[in-house]
Length: 171
Image 1: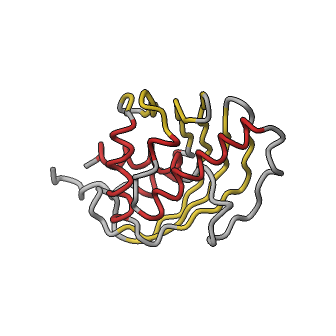
Image 2: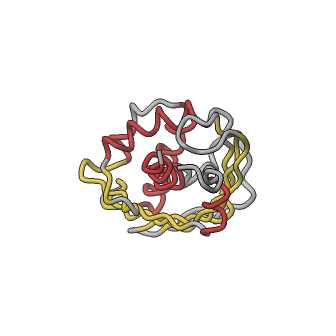
Image 3: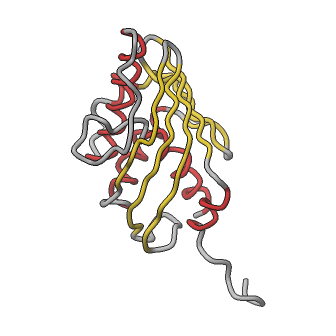
């Protein structure tokens, strides 16, 4: 179960690269990208975000390269894993909300400071109930498609999402 939780934590911030085109709130966003490649990178990020919101991964191939690598603490994950996670996350967190606090893009990267909230139904190893966390994510792009992803989250926020340890003396 911990592997599933950490995979979720690794993918969720990538998913929420941007939500400026949605009806959900964004507290702040970067000014429009100054060049077409940066704009293309932001558009690709929004495709991924929309896929996680809807549960529909049909457009992922247009935004994520076939050799995409999500660098996680459990090892590297690929595009097929991302597609599978989209459906799982959408079911596990049907009310998730995302705020883009700040987003910066250039020809090679999109950097995002994210805030996301919702309620877990407890099926992916996370305790049932609300979650509230912040993450910084870095996505590298090539030719307008995501090729690598890293996410950074405060340990305190990750620990709030972990199931409580079993009572002392029980294994």
